[in-house]
Length: 139
Image (tube, rainbow, N blue to C red):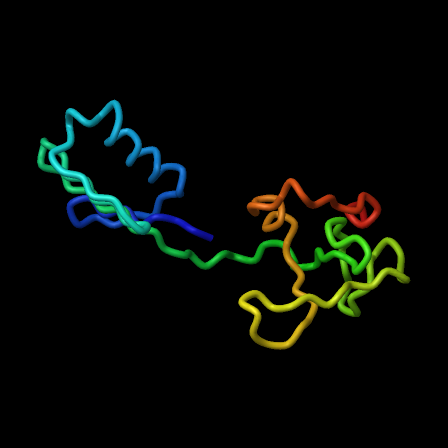
């Protein structure tokens, strides 16, 4: 999960991507009369305000706490319709449905079943492409 480390005059806090980019956008647009210098590039932003404050935003990856199990995966015939798979890689709604093998991200390593959490899928870039089995969701 991406977050930004916000450093203001030596004080470091973690802020969400939305909050960080909102601050950068404000500094570039309606708040630009309060900015002395600003630099942006490759996930790093540095803003120096006229009142003496110095803010640096750096994009980092924060470890995600696993609150829900990784059990959603597609099948060979309908990879975009996701089922909840058990430890034997069979769907909870119908034991005849099996998970398909997929290549690893990056193209290196063995093929396998790489299950994801429901929130990970819903918050991903391709969330609009996937549907969830209603029978599996209730079990």
